[in-house]
Length: 204
Image 1 (cartoon, rainbow, N blue to C red):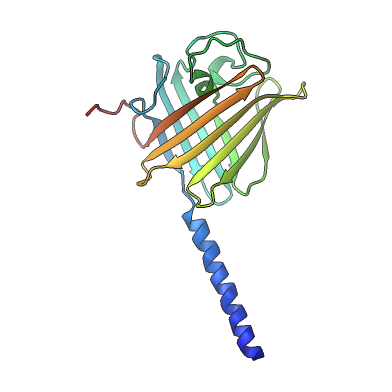
Image 2 (cartoon, one colour):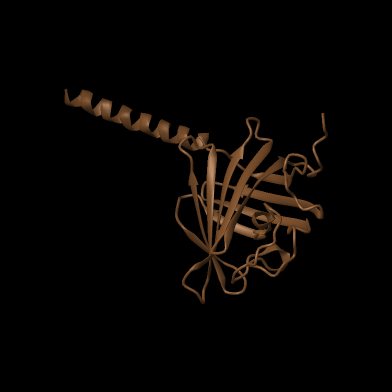
């Protein structure tokens, strides 16, 4: 009887190991070069030339390198967002075309820990970024959170949230981004093509 229990225990551990491997394998891999599809993404500024992300993902982290050419703001008012699309300390006065405030929240290089722990990235003008991610239960969707806080103030300057989802074939990345500040909020849904030029999708 004791031997049978030992065998069952070993089998249970082996099955648990297979289940763990299966869960890890089910998680989406967002690695690749992604270019914004202007045909599928609505509400873009007319002077935005290109928006590209190079994503590197392994078991430990997700690294996102972003490059944008052209204008990302609908109206260039003095605001929470400074030159080059980076978030600055302070408040914003509004006057943005819907969606372009969220589009403007860009950091050229971010590294997220995929173990669920919060990490810190130092930004510019005394703004620190608190980064955190969370997988959906099926491993298909990744929620990314960035809290920007001015080191000279107690309150957060802005909170940015993104939800990443791959298409069935893995060739399209959907990014639902929202940004909230003390003065308001904004959101936009971005569609990226894998290894594409970011040119508008031909109309059928």
